[in-house]
Length: 365
Image 1: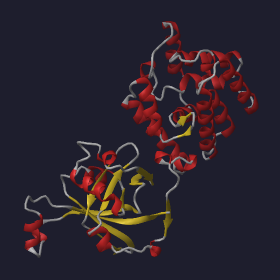
Image 2: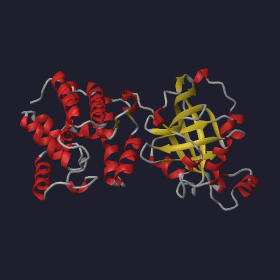
Image 3: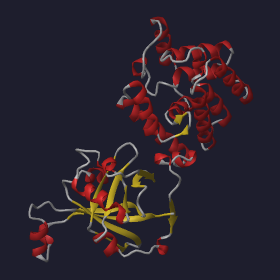
């Protein structure tokens, strides 16, 4: 059972008068996110998603500044009003992974209260509303919806840590709801990495005006692979653009020791990003430093831009989203020009050649 939307909103307003704080706006943002996502998920009630999202932190009505205590306080408050569906969310929203041992913060309740929460979590099978509010809680700041990394960084700053297993589970929830929606989560919510506005527009490849000899050979490009959770990039000045097997394709070449190769090999898609002269130093750094050793993307001042399950960069002027078609290692015995083999591969670290279809062309607005 739940109250009406209007009753829920009034209850939160009254609760803020009892204990003012940013928690109220955080709840409103989470509720808004939940409603938007549920609207795109078949079988989900967007109104219910909004109401339970609005109530997920209602335990702050009882005491502000508590940690674990707001969970049990919220549950009891909702049960007193007969709103059992909201009470459930009060219990489950902080536990993407079941078990009170995963809670971030202090267990500031008597042992019997902690045991009550543990028993409740053990007894329930999470449904899509539990999972949805767990996701939206990881997207909501009081100021508005944000990229998940920013919310996680905010929690880490306030509590000192954010366990890797919870971080991974948040990304799994994102992937789960993106699959249900058939849409990119950030596009549905209007979130862009770094809270920037949409900076690219898609164009047909026939509209593209570029000299590949200049763009690749002289200005260089970044080959990037991996998703929002983990990605890497490298600078390249060898490659090609053309037509093969009836498709518009690129060829990219990566030596075996490059860390980025692990990401390209692991996924079906990658990007090629092209930049203006103002990013020359960034590309130089990305060509010299390994992402295995340092956060070179941050050092280079680049902002990840997530598209179609892979990664590009906000600072790029042109991006190709590419789907792998073929890969093979260059072989010494196949060289006709033996000088090329000797000059380019003295250590015998032969490139893998990737042929990939250009599935999307993005240009800076």
